[in-house]
Image 1: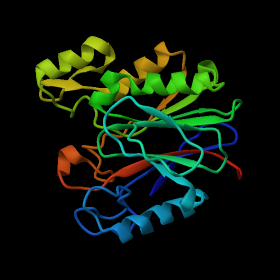
Image 2: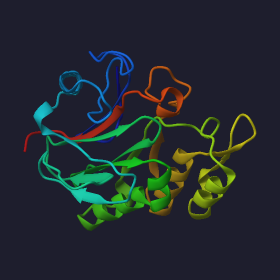
Image 3: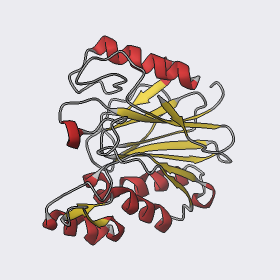
Image 4: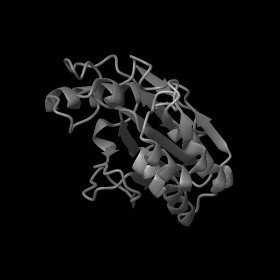
Length: 242
C-alpha cells in the first residue's frame, strides 16, 4: 500500500503502509527496514516493489542510518556512510527515504529551486531540531522556506503517545506545541504538532499533516504497539533522470 503525497510540480512524494510485501510475521508484510531482524532478501524485495510502484530506480534510493539526532547530509548518490537523520539532494531521480514506526517522517521540497529533503523526527530528533536543521541546509543551497512544501507523515498521536511527565516537560520546554495529554489523562507528546510549529517558525507555511496514528492504525507499523515489528517509509524525489 502506497499513499502518494502532492509535493509540487516535478517532485514525487509518498508514504508506504504495511500491506503488499513479502515479509512474514512479525514484519508482515511490507517491511522497509533493514535493521530490525527481518530477512534481508524480503526487505530487498519489498523495496523493489515500492520502487516499481513509485516509478523510481530501486538502486537509486538513499536510506539513512538513523540515530535520533539532528545531523543533515547532502547526497548525490545512494552511498551514505555517516549516521544522520536528515538528507538533502538536488539530483533528479535520487529518491530520499526515511524509515519509521511511530516517529514522524518529514518530507520537504522546493520545486522552483530543484531541491528536496527528508527527515526522521521522533522525540529526541524533534527536541534536537532535526527539521529546522533540514530547512536551514536546504536554504543554504538555494531553497526558499516560503516556497517549500512539507509533508508530515503518520506518527504516534498525542492521544496515544504516553511519556513520563518530566519527559513531556523537557520536550515542551523547547517545542511547546508538542505538549499533549493522552486519552487516559496522562502526560503525552504530539510530535507532529511540534514539527508543524518548528516549520512555521522557519517560514514554511505549506504544511500537510497525515492524520493517521501509527498506534491506532493496524495498516501501519508501530513499535510502541507491537514491539518487534517492521518499518514503513516516506519517500521524496525530484522527477527525471540525473
